[in-house]
Structures are given as structure tokens and as C-alpha cells.
Image 1 (tube, helix red, strand yellow):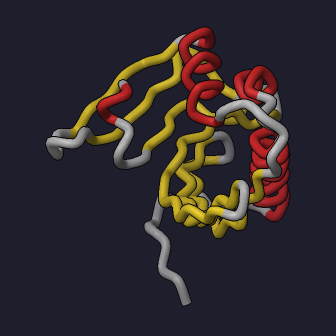
Image 2 (tube, rainbow, N blue to C red; image 1 turned 180 degrees about the vertical axis):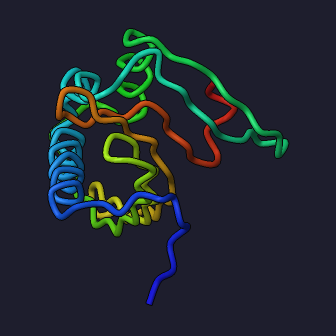
Length: 142
């Protein structure tokens, strides 16, 4: 049994289903390298938290233009399939805020890469959007 922190909010089945559906859509857009659609699924300015090669914590805020430019560069161009196998552990702080921890394997052109990251999502007008991305190792790019 996994113990989750007590946030005072117990998510409904719809909360979890809507969050799972959001991630399925985001992963599908990522697999297609549809960076513009990925940006549609965010709230800007987007907060980013990481660390750099020297081991120092770093943070930044990106506007949509910077997100699109950076993600296009990171994801590359081409037609090679990208697949994701992810295990997500959401912690709902309320019906409209969740911190989601993800362990994922991304495979591209036969090369697998293990990823661990967290996202903070907010729900506005019934639609989830990510607002903060947290992942180690990207700080030199911030």
C-alpha cells in the first residue's frame, strides 16, 4: 500500500480519470512532436525547476515562444516514433491542483531513456494544464 501525504482532499474517480486523460493526450502529442499543441496544454509563464551540472538548483519562467523553441530543439525533428511507458503518482491538493510524480521510459529510434520528473497541474474551467515542470539535469539550459 502506498501512503500519500494528507492534503485534506480526496480525489474523485473523475479527478483521476480527467488527469489520466490529460497525460494520455500530452504523451500522444509528444510522441508526434506536436510542440504547438503541447504548448496549448500549458499555462504561461511556465515555471521550470532543475539543477545544473555543478549541482546547483536552478529555476526559470518561460513564455510560450521560449517553450516552443526549446522543446522543438530538445525533441528534434524527424519521423522516428517516440513511445512513453509511464507510471504516474498524482497527489491532489484540491480538485483543481495536483502534483504528479512520473517514472517513465522514453524510447526513440530503439534507444530507451529512463526519466523521473514531476509536474504541477492546475484545472481551469474543467481543463487541466501544466504550470510547473520539475526535472533534474536541465539547469544548464535554463
